[in-house]
Image (tube, helix red, strand yellow):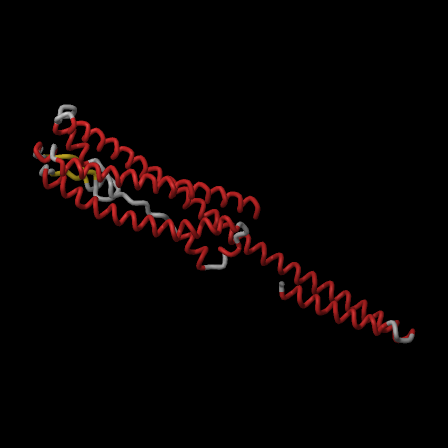
Length: 265
């Protein structure tokens, strides 16, 4: 219970005791007491209103602070959803390329020429990871703003997203990254691939383009390489499924944030 409410209740109890004694007094004393009671009521109402106004002011400040955090959180959730969609597109393209290359191997390398084959090989991206923007969430947790959220469902889903699902994503990403290192090395070593780089273009390592390669047909048609492609497809499909789970829970979180903001505003 609010401390201010406790104080007011105690005051009311004292007034009750005083009123019981009042009826036992004579007329002169009663008239004096009436004046005291009137003054007491005026003071009581004034104090009560000041407590009420102060509580209302604090509540409005807390709601405003929490809502600002939630608005910022909604923006970061939107950004994370965009990132998930981009990763899904990259993985979809990679799976498509793997299928085309395996079909070509099954047809004795008759479906694509060497250059197209190598170009598709080097464009296969398996080791891509989702990195959530959790700065706003960390601020919510570090302050009391998280506890100001009215929706228990929203609080539970945020805890799930930024704890269990984040740890699961990191574990899966680390496993796929280790495979991707070997996968990349296999392509570069067995097909002697060299790139040209435009360091001013692209997001991370610059924009690369194929410069020269030596097509190793015997390795290309080997069971070892075919199996590596199948493993790459397996990891791509597995991570796509995980991204779908992340996408679904992020969309649900955005809906709950919107609902909370509507309730609180």
